[in-house]
Each structure stands twice: as C-alpha cells, then as structure tokens.
Amino acid sequence: PPPVSYVDRLGTTYPLNSPRWCADAAEADGSPMPLMLTDRTGGITRSQIDASVRSLWRYSASFPLECASPISLGEGCTPLVRRPFGSGGGEVHFKCEWFNPTCSFKDRGASVMLSLLRQQGVTHVLEDSSGNGGAAVACYATAGGLGATIMAPSSTSPAKTVAMRAYGAEVELIPGSRQATADAAVAAHGREGRGGGSVFYASHAWHPFFLQGTKTLAYELWEDLGFRAPDNVIIPTGGGSNVMGCDIGFGELLAAG
Image 1 (cartoon, rainbow, N blue to C red):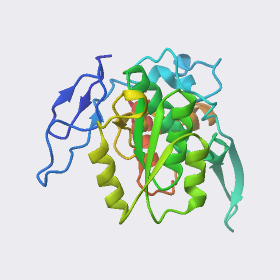
Image 2: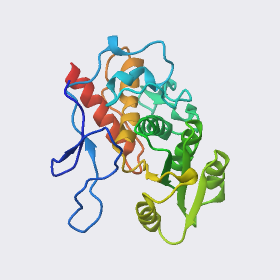
Image 3: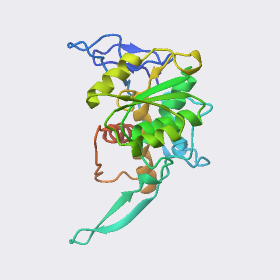
Image 4: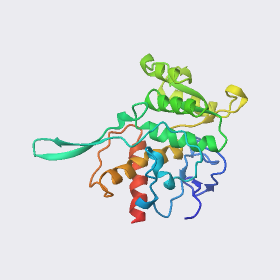
C-alpha cells in the first residue's frame, strides 16, 4: 500500500517521519486544525494477525508505522461475554474493556500513540484529562520511559488524579472550565520538559495515533466472532474515540474484503 501520511481537512499532507498533533494551517477562528491519517488501501487479513502476541499488537500490521519496540502491558484481547438481554429472548455480547491494565479502553489508544511517538523521538508527553485518558497516558508513558504531565481542571476529584500521580506523572490542576484546561495544554506544547527535552501535546482527543489504538476494538470483535463483523455495535461515548476507532477499523476490514 502507499505510505500513510497525516492529512488536514484542507487536504494538505504531512509525512509521518516527525511528530505533530495539528496542521500548519489554523481554523477560521484561529483554533488549531486537527489531523487524521490518509486512508490505507485496505485493512489486514486473518493471515496477517500475529497470533503469537497476546495484546492488541497482534494487529500491528494494520498500523501506519512499524514499531520495533512497542510500549505494551497486555492491553486488548479483553473478554467478549455472551449474555441474555431484555425480555424478548435476545442475546448480546459484552466487550469487557475494564480488563485493560488501567481498567479503560483508553489503554488501547495510549499504547499505540505513545509507542509511535517515542519512536518518532518524543521524550515527554502532555495530556489534558480529568479521568481515564490521563491515567492511561500516565501509565504507558512511565512504562515506556517517557516523562508525562497531565493537566486537569482544579475541580477534578482527587480520586482520579491520585492514579495519575501513582503512575509517575506530574499533575497540574488548572482553574476554570474543562475548556480552560484544554487551552492551557495547547499553550504548553513545546515548553521545556523534565530532563531538558520539549513537551509534546499527546492528546487522546487530538492525536490520530490514538485512534489507531482504539480501532483494534473492531479487529478484535471481528476475530472474536470467527472473523465475522457484528451486525451492530453499541458504544457508550463521551469524546467519541471508540466510535471513530471502530469506524476506521471496520472500514479497513470492509476495504480488505
């Protein structure tokens, strides 16, 4: 397949050989313009799954870059439990994502995003989060030898930030709204980080590598169901990274035939 690139909404592409989280151009209101990745010509087939790997890295052939040394804690490969549902005698499958290392599906995105960013030379990451995203990035950054700073609203429950600190991240509490925290994180991109390197904004809501991790949910469901895609997937959502990841993953599988 042709090389994958970053691409913005104007169609401008950027090579993957250096890290970036937004386009050179800004939106009409001056805010950063997000990036996605150019489409692959198709997903992977069952023969390209590395069955020797018991984590989402079994689908690494579908990722935009090869990664010789992924940051992995066994994320993915979570149970798919079939149970009766409702009064009509129907059954559904529940995907138990709390079996991931930090008890959240965001471990999928954090593993792939931080692995590929570390390979690109990033040494210190910054995330803005009041919950699971911050915990996942803090955990995987420490596991990969990266510095991590998590910005969270000052109103965030200490029960949430304690996990980020326990994993080794520096937590900065930002006064004001959730948007104020996001704005502070954007402004902090590029500042000096621990150990002298610059801080890179590695946001679960912005970086397209994060969606490369969440797309593995689609590949996993396909494999769990005997290499058949489900008829429907119901996803509780906040920011939408699981929905977008499944769209990418099932789209690749459809393109692969």
